[in-house]
Image 1 (cartoon, rainbow, N blue to C red):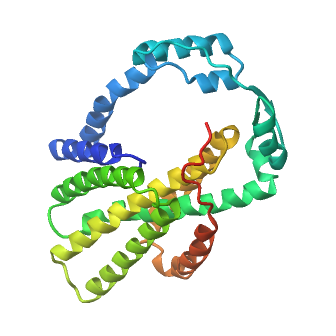
Image 2 (cartoon, helix red, strand yellow):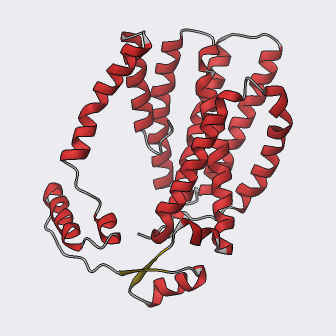
Image 3 (cartoon, rainbow, N blue to C red):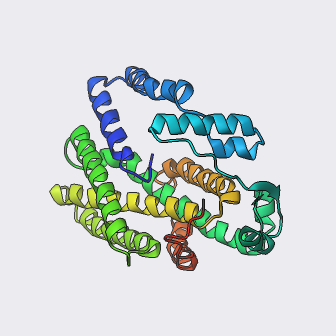
Length: 298
């Protein structure tokens, strides 16, 4: 569900409103599908194929046609761009050297990345970041019906504040040069852990007041910030040649976390020992993540 911009909050708000109008799950599912249909039709009939993907496939004429279409759609003059030649390369260090010395793009597959020492260690850090963020995010969403107050009103509040928080993050990242990816990730995780600790003590005392909702909203917003950090780290720490493969594997780890999330409450005693070790390992790995703000290459 998470997304690196404010669209996630807007989508959550629309889904909440549809579920309020259609309380039966089958009707709500159909309504959501119909609402999303215009976007699907636009993707199929209006948006062109990615020029980068066409270039990777060697379909150069279609690539140029797509570039002309995008330029016309944007209202700018089309200017042909000299694209680098594409070739495969298994050596990460040779790949880095070639990027600055040769007019080529060296594509790397998943297997090639896993056989590259420095790269697979970076991937392992990213996988852990995405997995933990997914488990936390989806587990929070699945248990949001236990928060005090009206369920739909709570979701509307969540949606609006998430959308606003994304705008705040964009402003901070744009106008505060010292704001780093590591600050975003570790800071967001620290706030989430603090919210969890406070909720733990409130739950132990049987408290069900407004403070529970406020702390849950705060924790959810900062989990979304963690998602933003995961997306940004994956995109900016990987070269163009392996960015798609790397981001795809990170997304796969997030899906695994999403599948495991519903089981957390059912097998809490069995997995509590395992999950208690995660913060320590996660903290060590996330500290090893590279600081890559402003280093992304396209």
